[in-house]
Length: 112
Length: 157
Image (cartoon, rainbow over all chains, first blue to last red; front, side, top):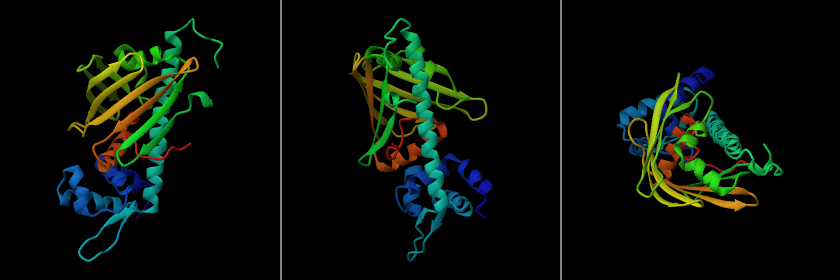
């Protein structure tokens, strides 16, 4: 199942978003993923299962290891996040432009 | 948006994030807008719907700041930090961490304000402890919207 609904549900959790962000840096095993999040491996595995079912990540078999990487839908989700973040930042600074203009009502109106 | 105010956002090495933005106002005003809590509270709000009910900023070396954000549906979170160096009106160095509610690793941030014609070129350079922290901050930043700061990525320009 890789419906939009499943993706949305998978992305609703901050840990899962962080896992995706980590995987955007490259393939990682459960052990490697568990470390920065200070979570147990079973807890991480549960999150990975949700991400996998949503079609956001895929696993590869390498001996006893099963490294995960982003699937195409996961890469697209990351791109979307970046766009959202960028938009939020731009919104902050557009707001600041207005605040600054109001701080100096008499100012430099000639500037473009 | 015109080219004058266009923002850039890019990663540098494994642990840095650099944001630049131009403003029409002079460095004095932009610096003040980044240190005076009454002004910060007006613009550092991220996406629509978020407010900042608490904004404390003691802008002196060793001084602390605390920003709390709230959203009717998405809950609330806060950032705490300390000012390390302040050079009015050209440079601010501080550290900060988000509380989700557990504190994230520290983000070390240097913000420069340079005169650019009659306006200002602002350059924010963030340093995270490691690449994984930067990645994790990217994710939480995206969720929270306002952690402009915490991005890993190529400039989209």
